Image (tube, helix red, strand yellow):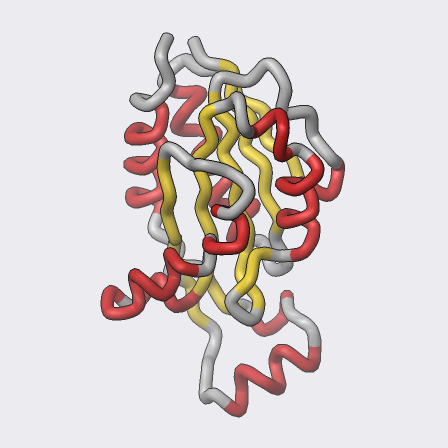
Length: 164
């Protein structure tokens, strides 16, 4: 049984929902999993795997996620780390490389064993007025691309990277 931390940063809930799906899958496989909003500054020590995920804004991880990674860089350097981001671009196969590239700034601080970008959702009622206006100019309507099967499959994949 592995001790796993899944930390997330989210604005409209997609990253936290994906973290919860990952946790469900990993617990079903018999692992001890803690899930935490990175704003609460969870402890990454004594973990066999740390999974970190963030929503994306303007091509970047949310500031609280990047700050948590920076603050825990030394602990993460001795721990297996998997990274994911959540963005609408990941819903388009032609933008896979671009969406994975949103992890670039965090990659300068950690050397992950796995990297993923999951398609997210746009729920107008969960974002700021300014973001709604911006997305309206791009003709974006409400959409939900969260793929539970893909999230669970990645959970099974990353846990194989942890020696037991």
